[in-house]
Image (cartoon, rainbow, N blue to C red):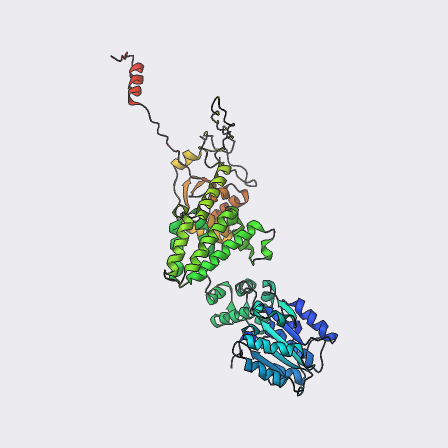
Length: 557
């Protein structure tokens, strides 16, 4: 009969326990110095090794040939405990044996001496499920235990255990196992089981398991049922996760305020049978990662990232403030809480994304605060200032191939100087815009845009950028491109794409990708059409002016 991986590869000695060195080291020292306590309390989240360490401790205190405080695993006592046939080691589940009668049976049994072992060991799992009467009965035996008895209590909710019980036990807190330790253990198990497990897939399983090695091994079991070649895609299918690319695309839609694209992605994921509450939770985790990138010096120590994922997340975080990110997480959290309570899960997620991509629809205090923050950031960047005219300059000759060719300069609107403080005698002077000084590599973008033609298959080329840099692909998603000779002009609804064009390294990556796709070397710039200003004039004044220019004298009579 097939045995699950988490049972087959349960640690047999303290050396095999992953991520709990602070506990295994202490227990081994106690055993080596023969200072074993009569009662232990193991507490921590699920799947972190509480019951496993309890069984190893039960073997270690009774092993005939212990080695460095750890059981040998080969003597008769160790084999009986591993097989569950030892008459001196008892394991009880307090969730189903919680009545006072069950504790009284234990009290009657502890009076007898062990059959083969040195100690009788009682392992009570989920001890917080005991009734108040059971706790009181257990307290009595913990106060005056026989010398040949050891109690090991395990729980995930230590706050539910009476303080009088806790004070009589030696307490050990099991931590969530670090992702790196889980991944290393998974790779070891996969190697022993002759399974091809990718490093990135192991890290993804470790991230999903949330510090529980048992959950990680169970997920690996499900992956093996799909394929013995376990990669990221296999893990996502087994865990029901959305592809990371979809998460970055949805985040880009929120940043660019592209409601239609966000709803299209949700529709596609729903058609692929993706779990909407899980997708919402993944989106919250994604924005949490952006929040940590904005707040923590080294976020990679907290969140598991691949290099490309970290680069893409860092790019998106640069275009958001902490207030934006917290607001996004709050809207998604409220949607997640409402799921399953009437409105369909898909509808709740769609409403949340519409609020995030069209913030004017959300009138909550948090939404208004986020919009004010966005306005303040826009003012600091000079976006609210009237655009300045750009003087046309002839295009310079092409430079040598060894040098990077100049790009059309993206002239940002100049920010107006702060007005002087108001005085009672006269109003503050009107601020004058700063003149734009053209450089040699500045070209007339408006003239180029006027004569440009649409660039064919631009959306397919943007998708191909994902292999070069997912950040570039996300920034250019939903954009359009126009061609004018050797110039490629990009039109987008947000400043995300234009900030990439202003970055020399990103611009070089885009140009190289275009050479690979089209075989042509383009110079990049923004697509801009001159905005015509309509001035309101008095028709009578215009008539007077034309008459004067014609030499006809005009009178009011």
